[in-house]
Amino acid sequence: MDADVLVVGTGLAGAAAARALAEAAWRVRTLDKGRGPGGRLSTRRKQAGGFDHGAATLQASTPAFAGWLAEEVAAGRAAPWGEAYVGLPGMSALVAGLLDGLDVHWSVAVAALQFEAGQWRAVDAEGRVVGAAPAFLLAVPAPQALALLRASALSNDVVPPQMLEALAGIRYAPCWAALLEAEPSAERRLRDSGPGDVVEAIYREADKPGRSNSGHWLLHATNAWSEANLEADAGTVALRLRDAFIARTGIGPEAIRDVSAHRWRYSRPLGILDPVPLESAGLVLAGDAFGPPALTDVPPAERAWLSGRAAAGRLIAARQPKS
Ligand SMILES: Cc1cc2nc3c(=O)[nH]c(=O)nc-3n(C[C@H](O)[C@H](O)[C@H](O)COP(=O)(O)OP(=O)(O)OC[C@H]3O[C@@H](n4cnc5c(N)ncnc54)[C@H](O)[C@@H]3O)c2cc1C
Image (cartoon, rainbow, N blue to C red; front, side, top):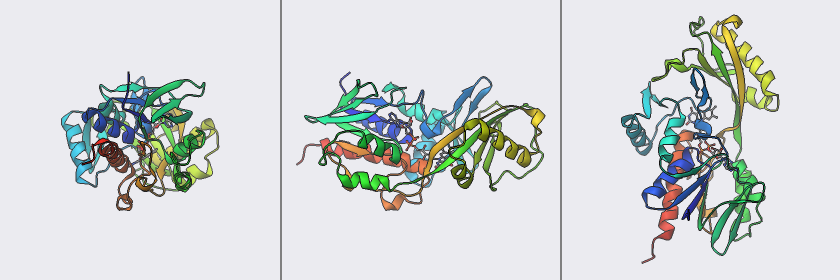
């Protein structure tokens, strides 16, 4: 299919952008290296249900994002949970809803970009062209955007050196997540599940609306612990986080059937970057690290959504005939 725009990365930012562009009648082709929708809002499927092992909830601080979440509640893809929101039946449903009906390609890792005669091309590690379009929207975490742009032989007028420098300045906090399957009857005996040295938060999936996987628990480690153990192997981390879980919940080891760990190398950005002055040649950037300074205190997932919509708006505005 001929596309007007290529979107690489379809987490919340890329998916929100893709939806906005499709609503403006653009032909959109999306590519993502993941096996299914979500990015950092992924839901890991297991026989007994899912684990929201990325963001466990979403918070809304702007009317625009709150309005979208209200629409998602009405559509049955989200539910309020206290002052936050969760996707139904898992967090990834929110991204899946945005991509519904679009030309979406999973398990496609883009290794390099080319720009020639007004056309962007995305190339995989085998050198195959996996997408081409005159406009290009890159919606991956800033360090991955930097790696991709550096791996591409693009001229300075297409990707100005200032863009690469600015991307290099964006750091992310890592987060190790542990996915624990316990006996469904296992009850927390200790009340404290708030932050500590190792544990940032513990969630029982079945406490959220619309879940019945009562044996599924999710533990997020603190940024400091995750940073200190970032390069440890996942098996070792899983056992250490299982011990922290036991200490914090009072659920005994005999009640834990399985534990695995997932490393989020880029969980939340530690700063943000206004991409607008750096963009050119039909390339725009989106993601939770991007936005004007006014969005600094907005929760990262909300910023990802806002940045995706804003990036789509810039592409649409650039194509309008000048009067
Ligand atoms: C453990 C954890 C807890 C969090 N808690 C919260 C919270 O409470 N509140 C909150 O607001 N936010 C939270 N966040 C952050 C939130 O999840 C993110 O801000 C948001 O999901 C980012 O969306 P995104 O689209 O910018 O990036 P992503 O979701 O990372 O999407 C990027 C996509 O790009 C794809 N990709 C990357 N490189 C390539 C490539 N070369 N080729 C093809 N595809 C590629 C990836 O597969 C991915 O799907 C949390 C994140 C984590 C990990």
